[in-house]
Every structure is written in C-alpha cells, then in structure tokens.
Length: 270
Image (cartoon, rainbow, N blue to C red; front, side, top):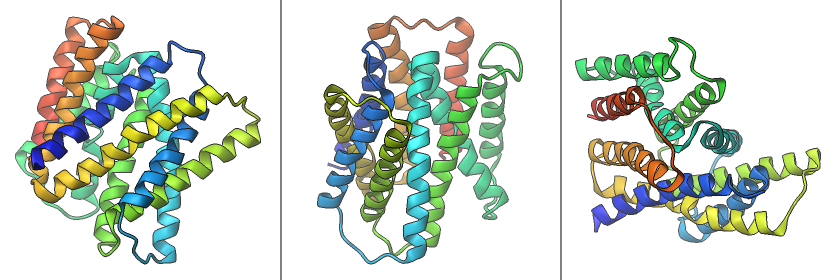
C-alpha cells in the first residue's frame, strides 16, 4: 500500500505538468486556470486533513508560502510553454540543491561527499543547460530559485512548527494562493471564461493529491526512497511524454544533462 501512495504522488505531479502543457494549445488564460485550481485544492485539503490549532506566526508563514506557490505555479506554466516540459521539469527538480545548501549553511548539517558531488553536478547543469556557459534563460533561472525556495520553506515549516498537521498547513497555503491569484485577476481586470474555471477545477485535483500522497508516502517510506523516486521519475517521464505526445526534441547534450540531473538528484537524496 505504501508504494501505491508513492506511485500516485508521482502520477499526480506528472498529470499537472502534462495538463499545463495541453493548455498551451488552447486559448486559455493561465492565471484564471491556476487561480481556479486552488479553489478545489484548498477545499480537498479542508475535508481530508486534520484540523489543528495554529498560531498567528504559522498563519502568516502559510500566507507568504501561498504567495510563492502562486508565483511558482505561474512560472512553471510559462516555462513549460516557452522551454518545453522536459526543460521545465528537469530544472524544477534539480532545485533540490537549494534546500540541501540551506541545510548545510544555515541549519548546520554536515555535507557528505555525495552531497558535494551532487551540488557540483547541478551547478554544471545550470551553467550549461542553454548551450552557452552562464546563459540560463531568466524563466528557467526563476523556476529553479522559486522551487528551491518552496522546498526550503516546507523544510523550515517542519523544523519550526512540528505540532501543526501537514495537511492543515496545506489548507492555509492553498487558500492563501487562491486569494493572491484571484486578487491579481480582479485588480488587473483579466478576462474570465467559464471554460478556464472548469479547467482549473480539474487541475486542482492532481495539485492537491500530489502533496497529499507525498505526505502519505513519507509517513510510510523513508525520505531517501521517496524523493529520488519522485524526482527522477518526473525527469524521465516528462522527457518521454514531451517527446511522444508533444514532439519536443532534445539534442544529445540535453539528454546527457538530463541523465546528469538524475544522478545529481539521487546523490542529494541519499
């Protein structure tokens, strides 16, 4: 049963990426779809999570994380559109380097040789991904730092607020992201279509369950198994489906860098 949760977490994350890629072929408003997804994700979190008492500090922290969830989701969607699903997912997944670096420099954890090697590999991937050394596109660079920041924020949450239920924290994060995104829509007077709202409702289901099943898997399976499985699985499957479904091509160099990214994720997850 534990590995069913692990597989479902992977498939939910993959569904998000594929669905965002499919939307790019339609005349959809990215912001409306993403804002609507948080309505469903937050509601599912409310009904399926344990309700616990939270302090004002926890609430404020969750609201801030929700803002970055919204920004990261928008950036991920745009990166998929402009750079392809394989590039967006690979760069997003190797951002695991950022919480590892925070663990070493801010939280005093001792790095192992494999950690240092993994960080060096990711540094090499970031430097050379776009062909010219140090010329990673702004959208992919932003995605790298946003995903890395969110992973670090969630680890900080686990360290600073251990008594707060993970699922209940997701309620705060999802509803906060919903408020930020809809606030942006109304203040910028974006056009709202009913079809985009329904697309968002569909997206909200895998968005919630990707976190829900991940938390379930982490409760039953060691993290050193969960994170390599999810991250390497996402890199491999996104490249495969990008090629099979959307005819995205990867040159030999990017195939090598994706392979190095898988190795780096495995090293940093040991």
